[in-house]
Length: 332
Image (cartoon, rainbow, N blue to C red; front, side, top):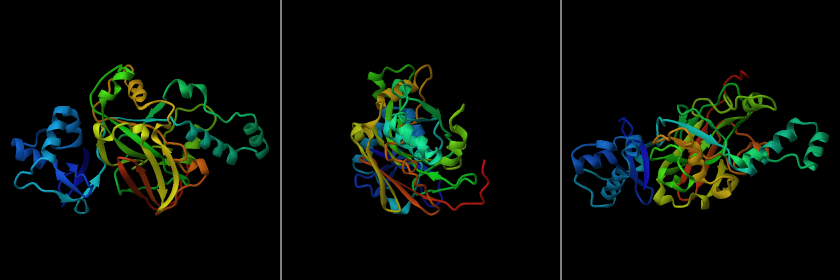
């Protein structure tokens, strides 16, 4: 199934089921009330995830069966899609794609380093991922409150002039668990969605640089910086995410393409690693990191106000966002 959070006619956000053709949505709460007399676990995406697989199976049976009186499909053109989880309980942002890391690092060095030194460093093969990159899937805790959804305008942070996109796929955790073995990680995955980790690259380079750093802060942490959607595709419908092709376009022009499975660590490994000594929470998001060719910094090509960014992931759909206007520049 494909599940959304949507608004209609000024009503509060609701949980919905997307039709097979992607053109309409069913109000899950109304459907549940018609079948069982109450909305129950079908008021919101988080409540459904927390309720577990039995609740999900009921919803699928109701949505694929004969619709009760008073319940009908609503055209997607008549609703506003929101971020599938309006307040995810936690957000972890991984970096597991070697090609992205190396190309981004090379691009920064090319533009920041003395040209002679850059040629020397390149010739010596020093521009490469560190060994620890392949040992553990590193991540940082993202801002789970700085959320945007499909077709939202992304506010331009006043301290940046180098705004960038990131083509990512994200895991939505279903079942809780701690110290989850890799071979059982799939049991804890509710579904997948598209993720765009909008980044202020100039702020990020200032914060991280080449010296001691606590990691990304304002480079990744501004209103609306974490966009995801347009919906969650349940794990059974998605199948093996590693085979999915991913494409990013800006203003209709393709900027990059990759396969989700090009990562140095499997999706199951990410789930297992996140659970080490820390219980997974239903509804939390594991953003898997930008794929190779999935960002502008790899080509030193950044966004402009008004740009339309589209991320397409096979078997999920398309996440589109527009970049807002720049304000007066106030660098960090």
